[in-house]
Image (cartoon, rainbow, N blue to C red; front, side):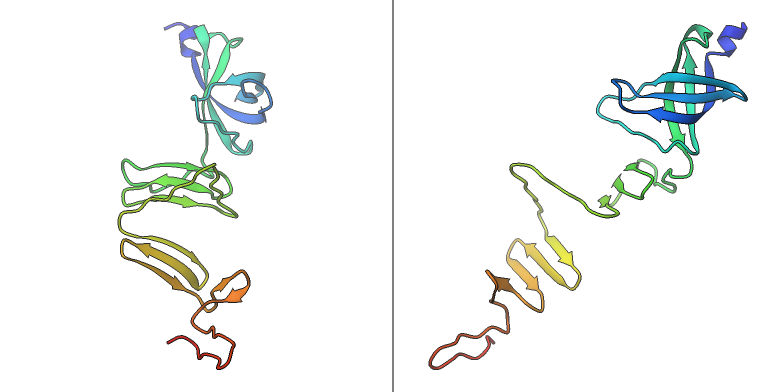
Amino acid sequence: MTSRALNMLAKAVTRMIVDTLGRQTAQVEVTKGEVIDDMERMQDYGLSSNPPVAGTDALVAFLGGSREQGVIIRMENRGFRLKALEPGEVALYDDLGNVFKLGREAVDLVAVTKATVSGPDVEVMATASAKVQVGASSITVTPGAIALVSTVLTHNGKNIGATHYHVGSPSTAVPV
């Protein structure tokens, strides 16, 4: 086997990533002391990432075995990779702990600071129930009922919850 064939794939360590151009580029160290600048990174359409430089390994392909024509085809950072996924599960994740996981029992979205859903029309559809909970307050919608749990329920600043009453002559007691 020729040395060119042996040099077609190599493992590298990422030293720097530039993510401002049409295609992401990186500086990688292929062998001790062999540093290559501006190596292009191929990414799948619709998926994009900018991995943390520290601890990120790269799989590099050298077209025709030439060190002049290298392309990064995979990157991984073992420090942040999700572990213990069940067979068949898929997840997107980042270095902060944000996760979107297609699990065996559920689809999970975990946001470290904030999750935002936006669009001109947003629909949430459920066949059994939908629940929104913030602290001790919650709203649960099922096919036959809407349940509100909260110590205070207001509309336009006015108490309309279980402790409200009507002022007048005579005033009403709180609802039973």
